[in-house]
Image (tube, rainbow, N blue to C red; front, side, top):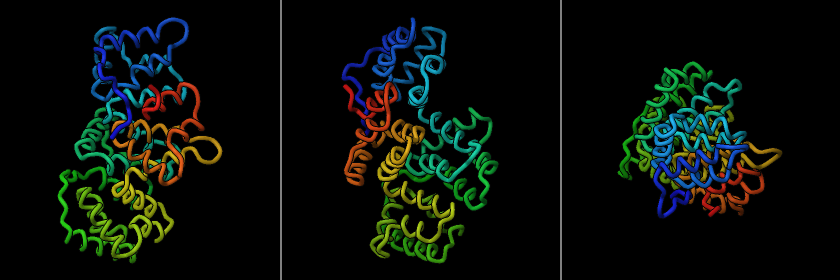
Length: 319
C-alpha cells in the first residue's frame, strides 16, 4: 500500500495545470504550489496533467520543472512526474553509465527486476530502448566489467516471470536443497542456480526461501553473503533480499542513505519516489521494526527545505 494522499475530489487536469503555471510565473517559484499539486496526484493523474500542460500551453511540464526548480528537490520532482517505466529506465541508464561504477549502483537494476511486476519490467525495457536507442542487455554487456555479474543481470532483466500466486511446496523444498548445495559449493554461476533465481515466480521463490530457512537455519541471503565477499555474492544476496523481503531492502536503503556523515540524497530519493505508490506503508513498518525509529524522523533529520517538504508529502505526513 502506498502513502500518497490523493484528495477525495481531484481537480480537473486543466485546473492543476493552471495552478502549476501560476507557480512558475513571476519572480521566484511557488514551490509549495508545485508540491501541493504534484505530490498529491497518482501516476495516472500526473500523466494527465503532463499531457494537458503540453496541450494548453504548448510547453513541456518537465522542461518547466527542470528550469524552475533546483537541487535535490528538482531531481525528486522530475523522477516523480516521469511515467514510472520511463523513470526506472532513466535510473538504470544512470547507473550503467556512471563513471565510477560500484556494486551499490547496480541496486536499481535488481530492484526493478525483482520487486516490480513482470509487465512493468517489459515496459521499462521498451522505454529504455526508445529513450537510449539500445537495450538494457546491450548496455549491461558494455558497462559491467564482471562476466559473472553480466550473466546474472542479463538473466534478471530478460526474464518474464509468471505473475500468479501459484506455489508448489514440494518443488520449493527440492529447489531449496539445490540452492543450498550450490551455495555451499560456491557454484553461483551455474545455469541451474541462476535459472531458479531469475525465472521462478516471486511467490514460488518466497516459499523456496522459507523452506531454505527452515531446513538450513539461516536466511538464504545470509548464507550467500557469508560464502564470499565478492561483487557477485553481494549482488546475489541483494537479489534474494529483494525477492524475499522487498520492504526490508528499501528500509535498509533509506537507513544507509541517512547514517554517517552526510546524506545520500540520490538513494533516499529513489527509495521514496519509486515506492510511495507501491508499498511504502510496509517499508515504514519494516523500518520501525528494524531500527526502532521512523522513516519520517529519518527524512526530517537529514533533509531540509522544499526537498524535505516534498518527500514528507509523498510519505503522507503533510496534509
